[in-house]
Image (cartoon, rainbow, N blue to C red):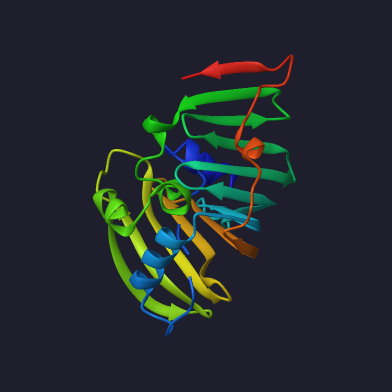
Length: 223
């Protein structure tokens, strides 16, 4: 999710990250499942694959790139994305600061979370405490089930940022609704799809995973 957790971050987003996953009663509607996920899933971890597709240029097919890594979060507002392929990048939100470490550039960017994680994927995935909090920043609508998942579309109420829409795919798991997919569309026509696997609901994640200290010798940019 470099580009879109950089959608989580660079979108005023940073990409997000950012959703919600209890005991399966009847497999409820998408909004009910999202509400359950946000309220009941206080922490979690998973592997992810991300495909970013840029809009096609005239006479050329769309260009895509694939990335993969691991994701951990703890509500409210702490998460960690580690991209391992094809380039190493780490994004950490510690509750106050959003850190983006690009290993190839030997650079760290630090931004205040409150300035960048409002209406972003991260708000859905790791920040919002309940559905009402999400509805302050997003217009939420259920979409038809497909691919074994329930879908909710989230459109930011503020149109100031680059984020156009997020589709959240939730699938049933032994502990309740689990995050399956995030589809993120930006105002430049770029589409990012994150597919999560091996999702562990309410996993014990060490507090140290949400702490970040810039390595010695890197350039640190603060916005």
